[in-house]
Length: 195
Image (cartoon, rainbow, N blue to C red; front, side):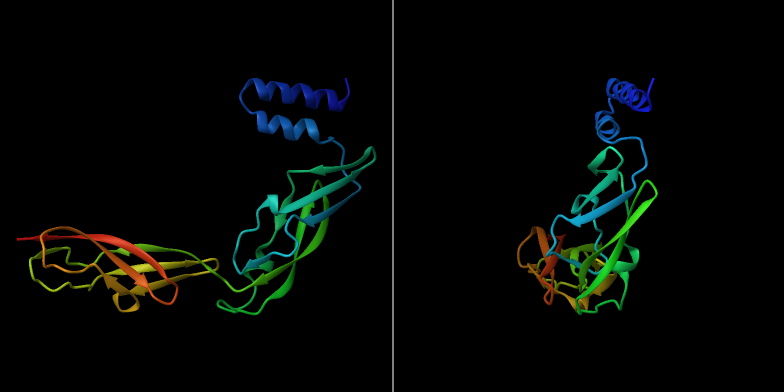
């Protein structure tokens, strides 16, 4: 029995156990070690944000085997230095190298890395006061939020945002919006206004 026969049998066993994705990887890739690999970006003109994760589907890897060249999966990326290098908040775009490794063979490709971008804004804590009487002034003390960037987090306090829908002139549940004006990101929380 050849090595490839054993891999195909193992793949079929995996399919029967519900691991079809693993089976595809095993059947489509020869078990031999490649003589070299070549990598290309699926989006060659893309600029990655500082700290952004580069997914494996952003890269195509072709391995050269004795039996011929094949596109492969299961490769690893060393991107830590490329996308995390430099000063936080640096807006300068620059070319960086990342290393791709597959079965003992490595190659490097260049990517463009630019400034970090905001992924989202998270509510960390609502204001301390959340229950009001009609006509009472809204108090934002105790509010904190976090801007999650691709390479760092930034804590925001009640003085870094603008609050809307804070009127306590009528009773009921109110949804207050806290907007970070510079980024146009926002979070919401509720307050209750009693008679």
